[in-house]
Image (cartoon, rainbow, N blue to C red; front, side, top):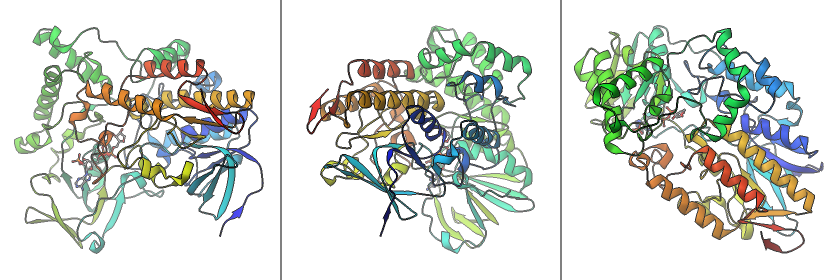
Length: 543
Ligand code: NA7
């Protein structure tokens, strides 16, 4: 049984990460009554859950931060080039305090279902505390990498040591001193945490299925001068991030393709980016994700660096990715990852050739051999982009569930709405640039667009907005067409849903770039929300 909350709520927001926080701030600015439900015990979303050692953002902190309030960006001091997780979490907390957001956020509360009442044009949102909240709009700010995934391994329940998932790390410090630790996975989370776990563990065994490309972060403390140069130029830097750079990250602009340069020049350029560090490595040339031969030159360069750094030839060979173009999975950014394998107590085990057969009370069995471990770290990733939405029982027109509608893969118009689910918005959803971009740039754009849309509706007395099927069909086709022109679909990545057994494989994010995407969204709004139907009275009208 659920009890109904009586207070009038205009918008329910699901999630209090960066998207949820900014939504609350903006919607409140319209004078609306907003209620945010957050399953964690505090704000911060992905940065609340991902507390593993070495967790930090791979976008530079001066760019991975809110731009909506100049005072905020002038006053907040980032300590390092890449902010560590505790600092990003403090920043989220600061934003919540600064704008007094916590009073409208209910923590430790999971949204169970959202059901649209077609007669009343209202959503009923039920939560884990047994309450039902009625609202005109629901916004899913549930995040793209927030649903940690634990694969099923035979014998897992028999394991007697401690098990940790990087995406759901304990709040109290974890000490691996003197322990034999096993890490499963070699994605970004593993690559960040392995060098630090190796500092403590007596023995570290890394179980790798697919090698990933990683480039050095070259992280360092930010100097006052570096901070000042951003702050003095923030209006232009933020404009460029929004408009000029596909991924929302300001970086030196490549003016040519990899094959336009002779080999020695190409190598010099790769070396320069390798030395300056960071994921802008992929921006050495403008065609690395478009042309296989060009991509090969970058991939070869990284493979060479790996064999240079790692002393054992067999380990070096295993660490060299061979099965996907560089950048078709998000490139990893590390501090001493490859060099860690030179430490005598660190071992790499190939579980592609010999998959994990069984987990025993204190060991992992693969290739007929038992690797003894006292603690297990699962760095096995997320049910990305759709996982957190799928956990909520969402029912739109005619009682259709969103999971049913998306059973062949997510379908949205602009990543913002899905036809048949009126007044249900998604922030950085599938079909928007989302995870292919600086998430804060994308979050701010979506939140601004949604807020403007809600204000537009209110000014015109419109009660309902929904994506039309035809606009959605066209957008889905466009998203696929743009992806097909790149090397991205070649990798078995979580962009494709390929890491979840049984998940339909379609390329989820929109790869056209944040500037192009923003323009499309703005044009649609300027044409009175073309492709959306708005209901002013009883009947929906095509906009
Ligand atoms: P990722 O990038 O999804 O990495 C997960 C890793 O776990 C990857 O190496 C997987 O190998 C491995 N994995 C997953 N399932 C299994 C099973 N069943 N057996 C063996 N190995 C497995 O997640 P992260 O948390 O590292 O990073 C996610 C994003 O966060 C990252 O891209 C950044 O944007 C921030 P696989 O490649 O599937 O063979």
